[in-house]
Image (cartoon, rainbow, N blue to C red; front, side):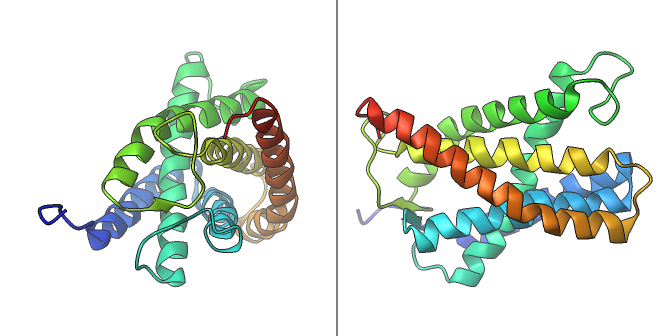
Length: 213
């Protein structure tokens, strides 16, 4: 329509970068520099690689008119901000007074699981608005929720559960420095990617068995 406002991709990118840097500063303040590096690699690089495959290899959706470099950069910073915010909300819900997710027993898996749930709930609000505003376009049509495919929410749950899980397992090694945490975080991308693909295939298969998409 002639009176529709064009998407402001520059503002979208700027907001994602600013929020991600804020999250990384908070991680550094609480846990230290090595954990900032680990968090950026796992929540940013791992998630961005998987999302990038969804956009360009599987061609499930696109950001209209944006280059692959723009898309990768945006989803890198976007996932850092989303993962961090949902992770700390989950910690706040689950942790008792005096506890934190690096030391409390059982928090290493409960916090990531709740992080994934919180992220999906948030995206139930984000995605319909973003699609309506034409910030991204889905090529796979859903039949349950505003035409958005359920594989989107499966992907969010998989990434936002596995990324904090991988980071927590490394961050709990308090004796490790930059080199060890950075190396282990990069190495963790492979098993995390395999787990994400397996989880997505399983959940999407179960959903498809009921005729939902």
